[in-house]
Image 1 (cartoon, each protein chain N blue to C red):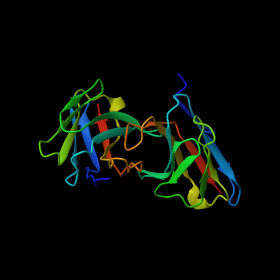
Image 2 (image 1 turned 120 degrees about the vertical axis):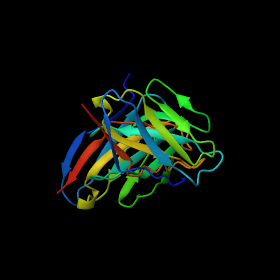
Image 3 (image 1 turned 90 degrees about the horizontal axis):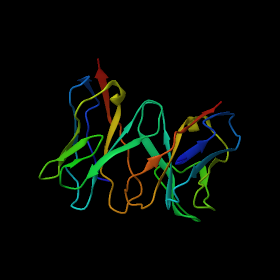
Length: 110
Length: 113
């Protein structure tokens, strides 16, 4: 897997957008960027993934830079329930060992 | 809409005992995975399976045994539990491997005394 770097923790005010960055400078051309989150004590939950175009779904938006060396997960209107650890993962193609690092602990504050 | 389930959800055992953690999925996904998560750390892959009767090691396989006789089940056995295996164990599944979206179970919290 391409190595990813994320900030250890971030805070966000409730109702504001949460922007979570991830660096993946060694990403290869056919490798996707995946985001998962883990709410306290629960199993990780898939959020979104992308290759090179920006993506949006009902949970979040994913912005990938043109050189694909970094990306940002955007939660447009963060709520208290979005408090979780967010993982940015770049799994190698055909590699089933998806490496979850330490992630970013997002705390949404009232 | 059962999805992926794990049992037991909580388990306390003693050093040296054999423990089996169960994972069951109702999607008929080909791939299944076992991860462990130690307090304050990310997930680490123990074993995975690409199909029935096909298994492979992950990052931390030592001390664990898996089998996959049926597509929907993927049990994880600790043959002789050690205190270092105290952890939260998550099972996941996906239809296609190679980094495709994985769907996780609720986890089993194992304490080895």
